[in-house]
Length: 482
Ligand SMILES: *[C@@H]1O[C@H](CO)[C@@H](O)[C@H](O)[C@H]1NC(C)=O
Ligand SMILES: *[C@@H]1O[C@H](CO)[C@@H](O)[C@H](O)[C@H]1NC(C)=O
Ligand SMILES: *[C@@H]1O[C@H](CO)[C@@H](O)[C@H](O)[C@H]1NC(C)=O
Ligand SMILES: *[C@@H]1O[C@H](CO)[C@@H](O)[C@H](O)[C@H]1NC(C)=O
Ligand SMILES: *[C@@H]1O[C@H](CO)[C@@H](O)[C@H](O)[C@H]1NC(C)=O
Ligand SMILES: *[C@@H]1O[C@H](CO)[C@@H](O)[C@H](O)[C@H]1NC(C)=O
Ligand SMILES: *[C@@H]1O[C@H](CO)[C@@H](O)[C@H](O)[C@H]1NC(C)=O
Ligand SMILES: *[C@@H]1O[C@H](CO)[C@@H](O)[C@H](O)[C@H]1NC(C)=O
Ligand SMILES: *[C@@H]1O[C@H](CO)[C@@H](O)[C@H](O)[C@H]1NC(C)=O
Ligand SMILES: *[C@@H]1O[C@H](CO)[C@@H](O)[C@H](O)[C@H]1NC(C)=O
Ligand SMILES: *[C@@H]1O[C@H](CO)[C@@H](O)[C@H](O)[C@H]1NC(C)=O
Image 1 (cartoon, protein in one colour):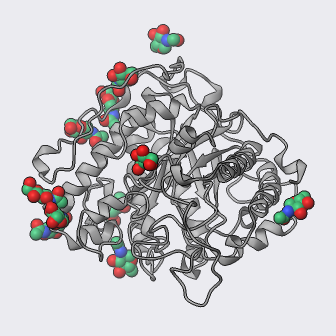
Image 2 (cartoon, rainbow, N blue to C red):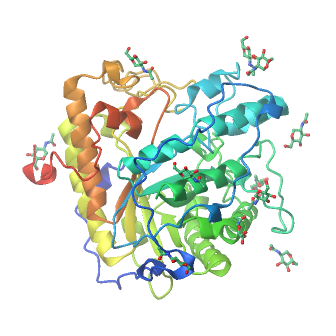
Image 3 (cartoon, helix red, strand yellow):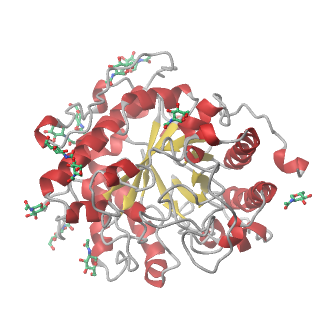
């Protein structure tokens, strides 16, 4: 989830630049050779399979009671047919707030610390005793997602999960890097849970986009990078970037065979000049590192860095690279202009946005919308950071436009009006259709403790997200104009 400080409205409403006829990227698809890499046969739907008795232990801060999973090797799970990237549509959800904490996704984890200065995973490690921090996190890793969730995602017709992970959870050693291996004050230990998640995904016919969501020094300063800070230092000098490349190499080398897509970095804030300057080279080097360590069997995902995909024309295309996918994120709630849109205005904005994406995806990289949601306000508690209010109801910034009360817009869906739920369905559809018009979409997020307007799981329950994600109620929503 991102806090987009730039106005995206200019992109939303300008005409799509006329893309030159750049050579279409060619995805190296081992998927076109079923059976390669030892992967054959399809699992078929496991939507009817029953729970495997996932652990749902109650909160307990005794580290000794938390036994990390040991089944970390997916060779025991049945094989999964390779995905035909570029041909088949990616339909997925993000597993937000699991391996990178976000206060708004699991406020209870933050509340349990009794310390309002703990605003992200970094300060959680910094301000709590090690054993306490470790215990809280072990419990969280063990309970926030279980195999039940993977079973339900598969049953909902999804074919991908995007799993955000912080660099501090990747157990590289001094044999893997000449740079620091210290992750302090972050608490390490999530790796076995990640491996277990890869097993669950495979066992439930879900392909995996592994997404490096937090890099050393922070690549954007958002709490969702692990560290909320006004001065992200990822691109201050070359050390953190080199270290990130070593981490990417470790991932590709060690679990490249267990994932389908490796996303080199989430939401680098290219509106920061250092990050902007470093990013193209990082994508190129990261691509090379993955290909060298894991060959051509996995796709490499890069991002537009909030610049808009048009900023990445003619970048990493064949024959310079193969098997690269562009990820762009789409939220319409992180500035006042966007919040001021009417409900129909939000739908129109999505329709406009689609034009540019389709044009880019046709003549450049295959492209997905790797994060988007049905939220039209920033009302979810702590969405803008722990202790921070909302623009919507004026509880954050003084002397700004106030749009109304947050009541009925967030929280438990039992407070959502029928009219609102009808809109949520339309807004879900227009954005999903935008993703379907390119190479796919990944919704943010599968679940949140108390923000149902962001939750795919609640959307299914509440009926604004269909059980079959291509079951359109509004197939011509952009054409109809209203
Ligand atoms: C999968 O491949 C293995 C080894 O090549 C073979 O023994 C098995 O019969 C294949 N299974 C299917 C369903 O094709
Ligand atoms: C830690 O354990 C003690 C003793 O069992 C308990 O009183 C306390 O509430 C626990 N703290 C947390 C954060 O769970
Ligand atoms: C898998 O688990 C075993 C036993 O816990 C451990 O020795 C091994 O290093 C783990 N493998 C990976 C890739 O983490
Ligand atoms: C999983 O097990 C296979 C066979 O035992 C082994 O070759 C592979 O390296 C293991 N992978 C991981 C990630 O542990
Ligand atoms: C895969 O899922 C099935 C059905 O949920 C379960 O019985 C089995 O234990 C799982 N296998 C692995 C390796 O997780
Ligand atoms: C927070 O306060 C509760 C209630 O006093 C207590 O049980 C718990 O242990 C405290 N948590 C921490 C991390 O200190
Ligand atoms: C806490 O853990 C960090 C490394 O994770 C270590 O440097 C530090 O010494 C530990 N502190 C205590 C009190 O154990
Ligand atoms: C570490 O440094 C040595 C000597 O400079 C070099 O040969 C090696 O490739 C480096 N290793 C990594 C992982 O960068
Ligand atoms: C990131 O880079 C800065 C500047 O080189 C350095 O001071 C800092 O320690 C690095 N952070 C990490 C986590 O490596
Ligand atoms: C939402 O509200 C309903 C009705 O008040 C209640 O039954 C349900 O438990 C609530 N759900 C959550 C997750 O709090
Ligand atoms: C949405 O677009 C339609 C068709 O272009 C237009 O008629 C309508 O006025 C727009 N509504 C808003 C609120 O932008």
